[in-house]
Length: 589
Image (tube, rainbow, N blue to C red; front, top):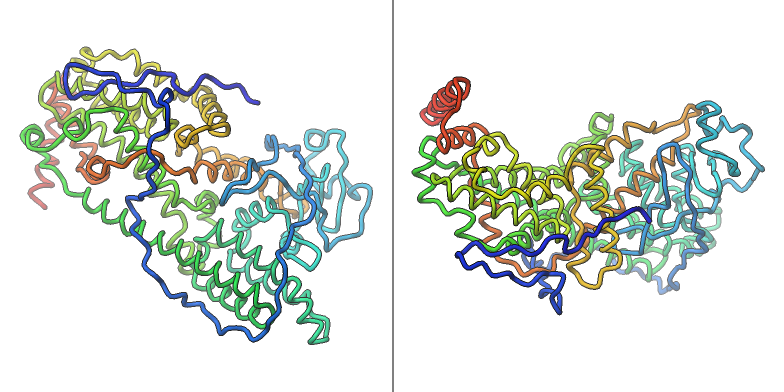
């Protein structure tokens, strides 16, 4: 187990800011029961009954089959030149791979040799690289697939596609299905993969005898449905591409001709998929509407007069713990709509796949980008709230309030909001307010900054994150399950993993060790993403957080100069330039 630090309840709960008689609310870690579970979603209304546009005629066949078991599975670990540690899959969770991995060689390649004909057939990077990768383990080759200690390390693209195709007596391991569906888009479009998999699955059952073909397909149909179900549930956004939906409809028609049980399963799968895509559409419309409402600008050159008429954060919520809870609602809501494939597509933009019309161009990373935009908005909201008040005492009070909100976010496990608040308080328009900061006790803020210190590749934060993850795995309440990572660093980690390891080896094989590690990092995110926020919603606070106007960077600097005047000629020139620039923009608009 990696080293951890005491995590839950590191800080005491923070007092309310509504009056001078500060009363300590009960700590979330010492209460007798978890907060009331609320499953409402600020972005989702109730689903209206939607007719399935992919319905097909009721099949005339009365065939039924029993459910399919997935064969024996062996657990394994990998060695890696890309710092691969362990099997990327933890406990079985919805939309998350299970802790097992394929040790079954490609069933299309049954001829076996005691070792690869040459270690260079798996890797051709010199003796040192081979020693790092293999050590004293056993390397084996099955056709165009290379294994090390029963772990798939490389293969040709064709062999990997074939390995995904179920047969009568074979179904790919679930960890392999997730890993290849996630990263195959680095090499071919999801539509191309689905077309080839479905074609191979059907063609492999052809024998020239129509009756025998029907019987063989009836036996493999439940496994094909299982594969498509895993695809639609884990990567539903792939099916926003009309070609994917047409392919799914074609397979439904094909299954309907042979197996009524599998046909019904296909129907149910398609209904769930359409419901999920409908929820995604509602979410994107809601985010667009919220962003439009937030675009209403305050009067730039009258910031102090305008602030007297505008509600501030303390008038909406004066309890740091409550505000941290509402921030956690927003974080988990937005996390839940990020597709795992968006991490891979975020660094595949320069790929030739970009030429495909519609799918990659329109929906490639929209939810991931919306989540990053939320982080930026929260940082600017914090800075705006601090710079707006005319009185130094009020500004200091708001700074102390946000320090306590950040502290509560840390206790909850909401590292993304924590980092956004710290970022907002370190923006130069806020940092320069020296007279204001002199009235603030910064001890707690310095502790929080130390936890999120970027030195040594955020080592302090990574230790705290491991502690939060360990707490989540042994959680006794919904609140203890919450882990919201610093999202920009998660994206950076995945990006550098992709950049630091080649997609293909010198022999043309795909470097599957890299794909295992990508899957490991993304599968952790899937576990964190599925947690339902246990806190009660306060719609007034939520509405304020996502729609209230925030200043641009120039407006923040000008508000800061109006709060505490320029200290030198450079700042005086900057204020003069900002006033002139913003006045010009207002006159032009």
